[in-house]
Image (cartoon, rainbow, N blue to C red; front, side):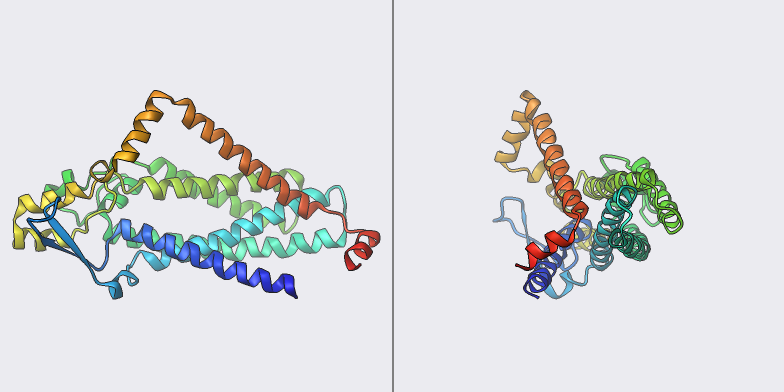
Length: 301
């Protein structure tokens, strides 16, 4: 029971963390509740006011958070299912079979929820974040005036990653369905690799789609600012919100250092890969532990 209590505490903490992080990502897509005021005393020429009651009502926030939550549960289900399926071919125990069946249902149910809310998130992004929608879908939203194309044009077109993620999701759905009839090591290994690839590529796409902006200016703010302060001031606000403008001297120095010493970047990738490989091995070892009557007696003592 103490172990269960600790588990519930971790579950609460590990839900609050992505809830706050996803609020930041939603704010980057669409800064709900933010008002811009011209201020000649400010270095950038304006100040920002925030209505916190509207920040949490960001239309891109709820579907993004729920897609993240359900995606994490589905990914965990597939991870456990893959390991149990792999080990069952060696040790056909009832313990592994039950774990395999339960985790497969978790993978299917929460995978479907993930797909639903990810689709809803993309719909809201299309409605409220022109740059992100343009980057993901490969063309500007229908409602965006052509005169504003230069303002909202994304740095990268990520349509290929978007279609790859759809393909990965469909393949995983087929593999999960096959897992209800077959317990196969090849299918288990393929699911493990594909679900990791899907989650990483989805995060990369979501993280890069808003560029060149650090915070994508909402289209609804454009006529309001133009009417109140003029076109030049409106463009000044948009340019200030770009990543290149908001980079601090420390980050600029880091970028310059990496450009001179690219080995630092490659080395960090290697360390990151080793850390994840070690993490997966520890999870595999924990789920692969064979509980014999003797080990159970030791645990009770």
